[in-house]
Image (cartoon, rainbow, N blue to C red; front, side, top):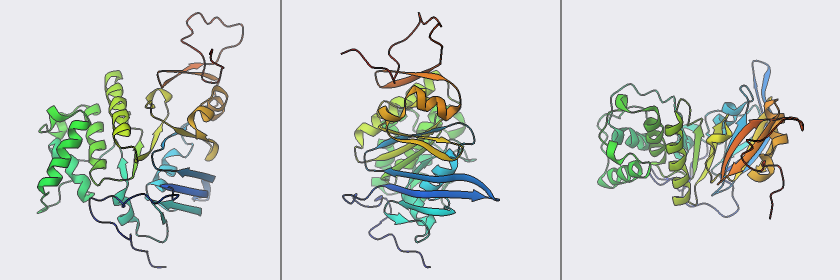
Length: 300
């Protein structure tokens, strides 16, 4: 079967305006099997414009595999995946993934590029600069705008090897946004960050979500503390299966998260941010309790 063209798509224009009623992502009854071993089983997920999903699960739960499907990096063994209205298996994956902003902190850049040049590689969908390619003045201006939005304006001319891990993460988000995607995928963006770097990253992601109300995102993490306040939905994976998926207040409860990670925990939420404590028995002292658990009723 020949791949269908991406109708109406032009470089730097994302995938055009969202079509009413058409999800940004839709996976139905997806299985992924490798070497006879099931990695994902019967996973379904629908992401719509403006939604910000957290993808949570223990090591080996299948999070990276699912994110690869959502980012048009691979095909399912069974089931269907539609990305930006295009069915995997009927479209050129290399073309489709150009219009998905994929942030991987393990970015394999070897050249000492400046921050602005790293961001501009988002237009060419390449790790290194493409020889003889020159950005337009409008593209340069957009790169500078995104660098500023991610809090790196003062580091625009800094070389990649001199950046902190947190600065690299924010530069990669700016890079992913250059083609103006409708979908942003963040694969454990806070990996390796200290507390200050993590908080700066979360603050900038939150600012981005507010400034781009039509943008949809999926963020993979092991840690609820890394979720931005604007997170609207969550999916919990356990052993390759979807344990729960839906609005964040319904999914991120102590009971469900405990089942997901195979360990008793209690969840707390304050000012839109989550924290986790090991579950305790009724007889355990809780004089340091920070606030109502996320799955407990709140006063008023």
